[in-house]
Image 1 (cartoon, rainbow, N blue to C red):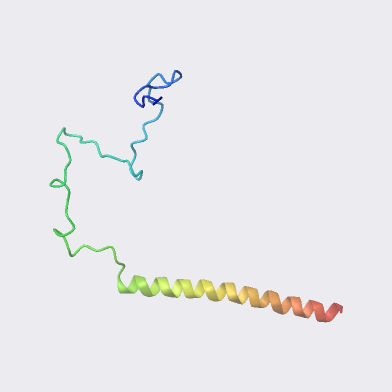
Image 2: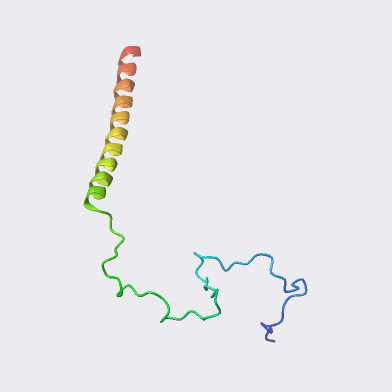
Length: 94
C-alpha cells in the first residue's frame, strides 16, 4: 500500500518554527521586495562588467606569500629549538 506524501503526520500542525530561507543555503530563493519577480534578465551578468575581478593586487600577493613564508619559518624555528633542547637535556642527564 502506497503512503500519501501530501498527508502530514498527526503531530504536524503546519506552523513554521523557523524560516530556513536564508542566504547561503542551497535552497535559498530571494524574495522580491518590490513585487517584481526575479528572473535571469534582472540579475547582473558577469559579462557586463568583465573588468571587475576578485583577484588581489600584486602587492597583496607578495604580502600573502611573505606572511606565509614567515609563519612557516617561525614554526620550523620553534620545532628545531625544541629538538635541540631535547637533545641537550638527554645528553646532560644520561
